[in-house]
Length: 171
Ligand code: SF4
Image 1 (cartoon, protein in one colour):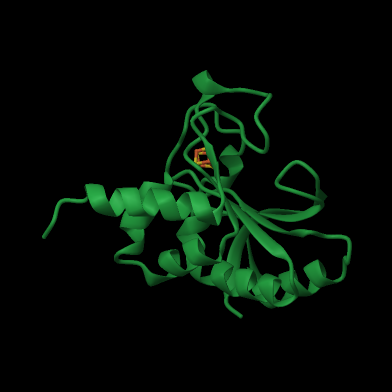
Image 2 (cartoon, rainbow, N blue to C red):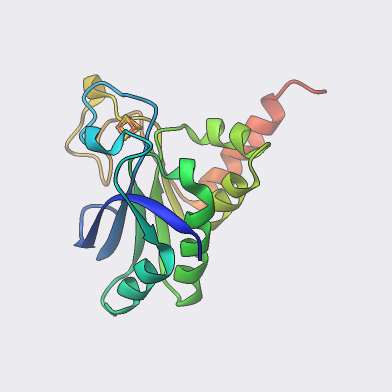
């Protein structure tokens, strides 16, 4: 399995998605949102390079986990190793959640030229999209920091993707 540049790992979390979760904070983000809670995750060459196989082995050791969450940093900058992890997680019947600073529609556009991004979008069960915006901070929101962020399941993403495709200028 491919390597992943990681800022940190929380082996058990109840705030980053449904149920008990194994959370990977990927290293590297280029968005520089004001008020970002994780500025140490921004340098693309920071963090630690880890082998995804050993990450998955550690995940498997805890039978209480409901799934794995990819947070950041920006997970979609490292779509390839995260696809490998997401496939392995699904393979043992657990679910995958991902946070991204991109909007879902921005990721759809990115997916046109980056097959790993397209594949990761297919593999993620629940996506929280959009950058954290300090002015829209809302502590009441489930699994999100600001009210612009959306909690999108597969069905909602299919609807948004159809709308995005219909709005795209025809070639
Ligand atoms: S996308 Fe996320 S990690 Fe990146 S700067 Fe914005 S809030 Fe921080």
